[in-house]
Length: 379
Image (cartoon, rainbow, N blue to C red; front, side, top):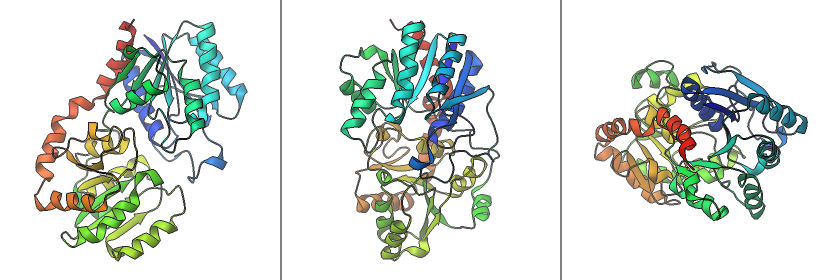
């Protein structure tokens, strides 16, 4: 089967690019693949990070990446369509996570539907953005209605898609779990002791990892720290770039009186260093206020680390409460603190890790590739 994937890939940073790299790695083993990526993803004006690309990262892809698209240059859209037409694939897979790409995607899908027989797959990481507005709904509907098939990573997202496009045939929407990053960030096996020595922290560590944005609820985890420290002596390790002013978080940390137990690493972590932070930690915490799914959880599971997260979006579908972690209500620092304390007091590490191992097959990339290949059987 010939499959064309359109989306950011190496050396772009971020969850979508990482996901695309590994999906394409596995797709290319079983199908004829062409991956079309971007020359420029976002203009600097709307990207608060320091850089959109990680040029220091090792290219661990086993497929050709064609850098053609520029989100602001319609001529690049035309060149991309010509490349797709020349390839004439059976399926064309687009990623959907923000309405920013509405008109780029619409240009491509309109031409594909008019001039090719290829089927269009939308792999929706977010049907609607976390901070959604009415215009976001209008733009998302305008773009997504061209899809023939849709893949989502949470039943909640399937419901959101059906609300947005009520005329869709339910058979065209496939809900499957986000695959695990079980090897992608393991450049070498590293012990907890060695990892802690590398990052210069010792003792019990809980980890908040990834871009710091309002919807991720970090403030609630910071507020939980005084309650946690009454019962358990540990360090909260916050690792990732801040999308807004870091000062408000630093001020909040000072107000808690727990500053000496909170360490902030305000930078993007390249792939070959991710393992140090996960291996050094006991537990990964996602106090999200809204979510669809999370690659952070799958990195945690890849390192065998239990997760405490909130009951929002598709997160409870990934983390099994009291088996691979705990699920708590959002915006509840006390309950968050209680579960972190419970994890240590009741020695949950060993049973939770055993359950994570049992879940490995459910989160396999081969299963994801089979899901995409199986779309050809849906009428």
